[in-house]
Image (cartoon, rainbow, N blue to C red; front, side):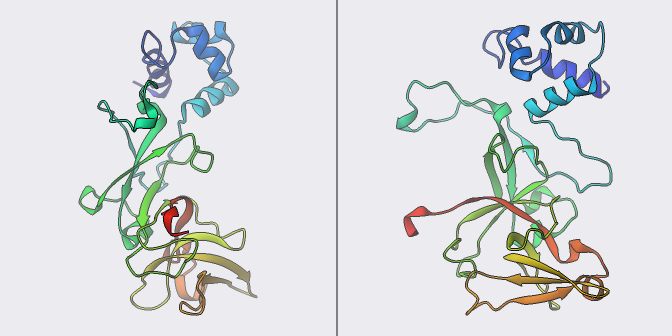
Length: 248
Protein backbone atom coordinates (compact mmCIF):
# COMPACT_ATOMS: atom_id res chain seq x y z
CA UNK A 1 0.00 0.00 0.00
CA UNK A 2 1.01 3.61 -0.52
CA UNK A 3 1.11 6.33 2.12
CA UNK A 4 -2.53 7.40 1.56
CA UNK A 5 -3.77 3.82 1.85
CA UNK A 6 -1.68 3.33 5.00
CA UNK A 7 -3.29 6.39 6.61
CA UNK A 8 -6.78 5.24 5.57
CA UNK A 9 -6.23 1.74 6.97
CA UNK A 10 -4.75 3.11 10.20
CA UNK A 11 -7.90 5.17 10.73
CA UNK A 12 -10.24 2.28 9.93
CA UNK A 13 -8.34 0.05 12.39
CA UNK A 14 -9.05 2.54 15.19
CA UNK A 15 -12.85 2.64 14.78
CA UNK A 16 -15.24 0.22 16.46
CA UNK A 17 -16.27 -1.25 19.82
CA UNK A 18 -13.42 -1.31 22.30
CA UNK A 19 -11.14 0.70 20.01
CA UNK A 20 -9.89 4.26 20.20
CA UNK A 21 -13.01 5.70 18.52
CA UNK A 22 -16.49 4.13 18.78
CA UNK A 23 -17.63 5.65 15.46
CA UNK A 24 -16.63 7.88 12.55
CA UNK A 25 -18.25 10.98 14.05
CA UNK A 26 -16.25 10.71 17.28
CA UNK A 27 -13.04 10.27 15.29
CA UNK A 28 -13.77 13.30 13.09
CA UNK A 29 -14.48 15.47 16.15
CA UNK A 30 -11.27 14.39 17.87
CA UNK A 31 -9.12 14.79 14.75
CA UNK A 32 -10.56 18.20 13.93
CA UNK A 33 -11.85 17.36 10.44
CA UNK A 34 -15.25 17.56 8.76
CA UNK A 35 -17.19 14.29 9.37
CA UNK A 36 -18.47 14.10 5.80
CA UNK A 37 -14.96 14.61 4.42
CA UNK A 38 -13.60 11.88 6.68
CA UNK A 39 -16.39 9.48 5.67
CA UNK A 40 -15.70 10.03 1.96
CA UNK A 41 -11.98 9.47 2.56
CA UNK A 42 -12.57 6.20 4.42
CA UNK A 43 -14.89 5.02 1.62
CA UNK A 44 -12.26 5.89 -1.02
CA UNK A 45 -14.64 8.39 -2.62
CA UNK A 46 -12.17 11.28 -2.43
CA UNK A 47 -8.87 12.31 -0.85
CA UNK A 48 -8.07 14.73 1.95
CA UNK A 49 -6.83 18.27 1.52
CA UNK A 50 -3.43 19.07 3.02
CA UNK A 51 -4.87 20.89 6.05
CA UNK A 52 -7.17 18.02 7.02
CA UNK A 53 -4.40 15.49 6.50
CA UNK A 54 -2.11 17.59 8.70
CA UNK A 55 -4.72 17.66 11.51
CA UNK A 56 -5.07 13.90 11.33
CA UNK A 57 -1.34 13.16 11.33
CA UNK A 58 -0.73 15.59 14.22
CA UNK A 59 -3.50 14.08 16.34
CA UNK A 60 -2.31 10.54 15.69
CA UNK A 61 1.27 11.50 16.59
CA UNK A 62 2.58 10.61 13.13
CA UNK A 63 6.01 11.91 12.10
CA UNK A 64 7.65 11.91 8.68
CA UNK A 65 11.21 10.60 8.32
CA UNK A 66 13.03 11.52 5.11
CA UNK A 67 15.65 9.25 3.57
CA UNK A 68 18.57 11.52 4.45
CA UNK A 69 17.67 11.72 8.17
CA UNK A 70 19.17 9.45 10.88
CA UNK A 71 17.55 6.06 11.25
CA UNK A 72 14.86 6.16 13.90
CA UNK A 73 15.51 3.72 16.73
CA UNK A 74 12.21 4.36 18.50
CA UNK A 75 9.75 1.46 18.48
CA UNK A 76 5.98 1.34 18.61
CA UNK A 77 4.51 -0.54 21.57
CA UNK A 78 2.40 -3.69 21.55
CA UNK A 79 0.86 -4.07 25.01
CA UNK A 80 0.17 -7.22 26.88
CA UNK A 81 -2.26 -6.67 29.76
CA UNK A 82 -0.14 -4.49 32.08
CA UNK A 83 0.00 -4.57 35.82
CA UNK A 84 -1.43 -1.51 37.57
CA UNK A 85 -0.50 0.30 40.75
CA UNK A 86 -2.98 0.31 43.61
CA UNK A 87 -3.87 3.90 42.74
CA UNK A 88 -5.10 2.83 39.28
CA UNK A 89 -7.88 0.50 40.41
CA UNK A 90 -10.92 0.64 38.10
CA UNK A 91 -9.32 2.87 35.48
CA UNK A 92 -9.22 1.84 31.79
CA UNK A 93 -6.09 0.11 30.54
CA UNK A 94 -3.43 2.21 28.77
CA UNK A 95 -3.65 2.39 24.97
CA UNK A 96 -0.61 1.28 22.94
CA UNK A 97 -1.07 4.20 20.52
CA UNK A 98 -0.23 6.60 23.36
CA UNK A 99 3.26 5.20 23.98
CA UNK A 100 6.66 4.74 22.34
CA UNK A 101 9.48 2.41 23.39
CA UNK A 102 12.82 4.24 23.38
CA UNK A 103 16.10 2.26 23.43
CA UNK A 104 18.29 2.74 26.50
CA UNK A 105 21.94 2.88 25.38
CA UNK A 106 25.26 4.17 26.65
CA UNK A 107 26.13 7.81 25.95
CA UNK A 108 28.73 7.03 23.27
CA UNK A 109 26.25 4.94 21.28
CA UNK A 110 23.55 7.59 21.62
CA UNK A 111 25.92 10.32 20.37
CA UNK A 112 26.77 8.33 17.23
CA UNK A 113 24.53 9.59 14.39
CA UNK A 114 24.41 6.15 12.78
CA UNK A 115 21.70 3.52 13.29
CA UNK A 116 21.50 1.76 16.66
CA UNK A 117 21.64 -2.01 16.48
CA UNK A 118 19.56 -4.07 18.89
CA UNK A 119 22.64 -5.57 20.55
CA UNK A 120 23.57 -2.05 21.72
CA UNK A 121 20.31 -1.58 23.62
CA UNK A 122 20.59 -2.13 27.37
CA UNK A 123 16.81 -2.03 27.65
CA UNK A 124 13.75 -0.01 26.60
CA UNK A 125 12.11 2.99 28.23
CA UNK A 126 8.38 3.55 27.76
CA UNK A 127 7.39 7.19 27.13
CA UNK A 128 3.98 8.83 26.83
CA UNK A 129 4.01 10.34 23.33
CA UNK A 130 1.60 13.18 24.23
CA UNK A 131 3.96 14.78 26.74
CA UNK A 132 4.54 18.29 25.37
CA UNK A 133 8.33 18.06 25.01
CA UNK A 134 8.06 14.69 23.22
CA UNK A 135 5.20 15.41 20.82
CA UNK A 136 6.13 15.20 17.12
CA UNK A 137 9.58 13.77 18.00
CA UNK A 138 10.60 10.27 16.99
CA UNK A 139 14.40 9.91 16.70
CA UNK A 140 14.79 9.36 20.43
CA UNK A 141 17.25 7.47 22.62
CA UNK A 142 17.50 7.17 26.39
CA UNK A 143 20.76 7.54 28.34
CA UNK A 144 21.40 6.91 32.05
CA UNK A 145 23.76 9.20 33.96
CA UNK A 146 26.87 7.15 34.73
CA UNK A 147 27.67 5.97 38.28
CA UNK A 148 29.82 8.56 40.03
CA UNK A 149 29.07 11.29 37.46
CA UNK A 150 28.09 14.40 39.44
CA UNK A 151 28.83 16.87 36.65
CA UNK A 152 25.19 17.96 36.32
CA UNK A 153 24.27 17.82 40.03
CA UNK A 154 21.97 18.92 41.53
CA UNK A 155 19.84 18.84 38.34
CA UNK A 156 20.86 15.25 37.56
CA UNK A 157 22.41 12.46 39.59
CA UNK A 158 23.90 9.06 38.72
CA UNK A 159 21.13 6.69 37.65
CA UNK A 160 18.82 9.42 36.37
CA UNK A 161 17.65 8.81 32.80
CA UNK A 162 17.39 11.41 30.05
CA UNK A 163 15.71 11.17 26.65
CA UNK A 164 17.72 12.64 23.77
CA UNK A 165 16.34 13.79 20.42
CA UNK A 166 19.10 12.91 17.96
CA UNK A 167 17.48 15.05 15.25
CA UNK A 168 17.91 18.24 17.32
CA UNK A 169 21.54 19.41 17.33
CA UNK A 170 20.89 23.16 17.40
CA UNK A 171 22.81 24.61 20.41
CA UNK A 172 20.46 27.56 20.80
CA UNK A 173 19.23 28.94 23.11
CA UNK A 174 22.35 29.23 25.25
CA UNK A 175 22.38 26.86 28.20
CA UNK A 176 20.45 24.11 26.43
CA UNK A 177 21.16 20.67 27.93
CA UNK A 178 22.54 18.36 25.26
CA UNK A 179 24.44 15.12 24.70
CA UNK A 180 27.90 16.17 23.50
CA UNK A 181 31.20 14.68 22.41
CA UNK A 182 33.93 16.22 24.52
CA UNK A 183 37.27 17.30 22.96
CA UNK A 184 40.25 14.98 22.96
CA UNK A 185 41.21 11.69 21.40
CA UNK A 186 38.86 9.72 23.64
CA UNK A 187 35.91 11.85 22.55
CA UNK A 188 33.91 10.84 25.63
CA UNK A 189 30.17 11.53 25.38
CA UNK A 190 28.56 13.42 28.24
CA UNK A 191 25.50 15.45 29.23
CA UNK A 192 26.39 19.15 29.26
CA UNK A 193 24.91 22.58 28.81
CA UNK A 194 25.94 24.15 25.53
CA UNK A 195 26.66 27.69 24.45
CA UNK A 196 27.73 28.89 21.02
CA UNK A 197 29.74 31.97 20.08
CA UNK A 198 30.35 33.05 16.49
CA UNK A 199 33.95 33.95 15.68
CA UNK A 200 35.30 35.58 12.52
CA UNK A 201 35.43 32.39 10.49
CA UNK A 202 34.26 29.70 12.89
CA UNK A 203 31.77 28.87 15.66
CA UNK A 204 32.99 28.15 19.18
CA UNK A 205 30.97 25.58 21.12
CA UNK A 206 31.25 25.80 24.90
CA UNK A 207 30.37 22.72 26.94
CA UNK A 208 29.84 23.38 30.64
CA UNK A 209 28.44 21.49 33.60
CA UNK A 210 26.36 22.54 36.59
CA UNK A 211 29.28 21.49 38.81
CA UNK A 212 31.97 23.62 37.18
CA UNK A 213 34.44 23.39 40.09
CA UNK A 214 34.99 19.65 39.55
CA UNK A 215 34.05 19.58 35.87
CA UNK A 216 35.44 22.73 34.21
CA UNK A 217 34.09 23.95 30.83
CA UNK A 218 35.60 22.79 27.55
CA UNK A 219 35.39 24.24 24.05
CA UNK A 220 35.46 23.08 20.43
CA UNK A 221 35.67 25.01 17.19
CA UNK A 222 33.16 23.67 14.71
CA UNK A 223 35.28 24.06 11.57
CA UNK A 224 38.75 23.55 13.02
CA UNK A 225 38.00 20.62 15.32
CA UNK A 226 34.96 19.02 13.68
CA UNK A 227 35.41 19.76 9.96
CA UNK A 228 32.18 21.74 10.14
CA UNK A 229 30.19 18.61 11.05
CA UNK A 230 28.04 19.33 14.10
CA UNK A 231 27.39 15.59 14.65
CA UNK A 232 31.04 15.25 15.71
CA UNK A 233 30.37 17.65 18.59
CA UNK A 234 26.68 17.32 19.50
CA UNK A 235 24.68 14.10 19.66
CA UNK A 236 21.27 15.62 20.34
CA UNK A 237 19.14 17.66 22.72
CA UNK A 238 17.89 16.42 26.09
CA UNK A 239 14.09 16.74 25.93
CA UNK A 240 12.92 14.76 28.96
CA UNK A 241 14.35 13.29 32.16
CA UNK A 242 13.45 10.92 34.98
CA UNK A 243 14.95 12.06 38.27
CA UNK A 244 15.16 10.34 41.63
CA UNK A 245 13.28 12.99 43.62
CA UNK A 246 14.11 11.29 46.92
CA UNK A 247 17.57 12.90 46.66
CA UNK A 248 16.34 16.41 45.93
